[in-house]
Length: 75
Image (cartoon, rainbow, N blue to C red; front, top):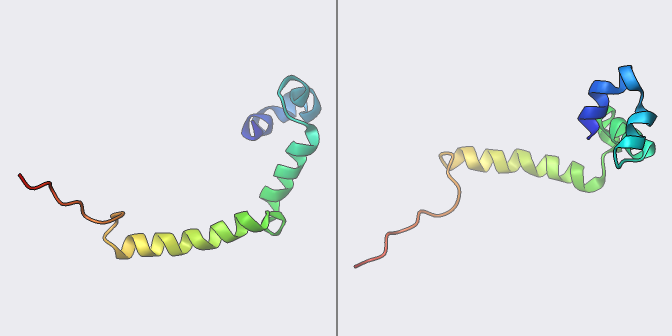
């Protein structure tokens, strides 16, 4: 919804779009502020971003595979 509002705000304005969509203008403003300034992101989002770097590093170091190799059942 946020990207839709971004795409159409110049033509229709934020508040009229928000009246039609189930979103408050203040919610849209909050998300826009968070995108503009990463320091306004919630603590969880910031920690997830830091962890994602480590997850990608481990994934690359593990030959781009996830988990343990599954053995075939013996018959």
